[in-house]
Length: 500
Image 1: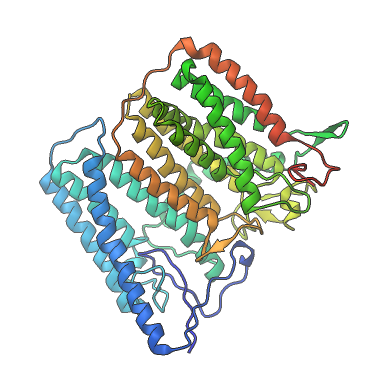
Image 2: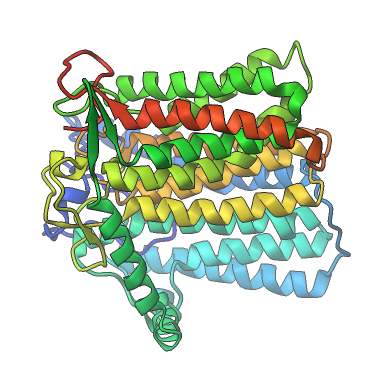
């Protein structure tokens, strides 16, 4: 008989229902169906896949976290705390195993996102603790770190494990549940029972509503002025600021002696963003000049790595780029809000924004007048947090590779979450994840590897580079403002149009 394979997050009690709720079908492409022509071959392949999947999370991941905690050095130290650490470890393991047992007992399945349980589990430990397997694993990571006195394990590995689990829940499981069941679980210690009442007391819901109103106003502000055959779009100011601020920060942190290298890498980033945008999105009606974040990142990193053998100080330049990365991304997302690129999917009952401007890419996607997720705003908020973390590390003289690797990890997690709510129809879905979510996973893996490489500490920025940084910032303000805010709407040539 044909068998349908659905994906959940490890540790989740949730599965696909026989009759899925269609309220948010626009959010996801239907998941793959695995049909077996031969039952025995299918069972054998599934058994092998389950074993490999289990080994990945039960053996490979814990061993990697141990290696990571040993290899990565941070500027903190702690003494061993065997008793509190042992209690946390034991409690975490109990919670983890309890969650697995309830999935087996009540859900008739294992905690494997590729091979989910056959029933929805809301009883047992899942009625009390949200995602008990995740919570137990995080507690166990912290407990083991305290037992052995690992500052890296306690202050870096454990928070990153918790952040990764949160990214999986927010970027995959939550939208999956909304699409499938039209609702979310409400465990006793979950957000709906604890966090939401606190937020209401602090009036955070009113604050969020105000931020959404401002975002919606910006999303409907698209306007332009024609000069000859060229069209200057109002979001050019945000594109220019993103490039200008980024160039200013990179030169300020790396020094004026690296202006030539910074220029080369910035140009490589612009070219990479345009090329990858064409490869993944291509020319379409009303749009022939898309830019891709991952293409820009790849262009900068590849160009920098090519120059490292000739100049070891390129490590500093690349680290400066990662420091500037969240600033560039956050400011650039203001352009995305106006342009309508990177827009969200229909948000159902969740708070969202409504776009009416015909020139927005939201309209090109057929979502004009519909409430959608403010995904660009999610990105801005996430990158603001990353910028604050990296600023603290740079001011404390952390290793350059720690700063650069941490940017890749955190930016990857933020992008994974954001992509879970985006709604561009041209985005490909591969093995149940959007292609950009796979890229985000690659960023997390690459960033983890980078952090394990030794490097010099981050230097303090000097005032001597201010003039050079200002000049570079002005130059790239003009270049990026024109490249991402000026187009030729009457031309049919490639790269001619930014909007309809």
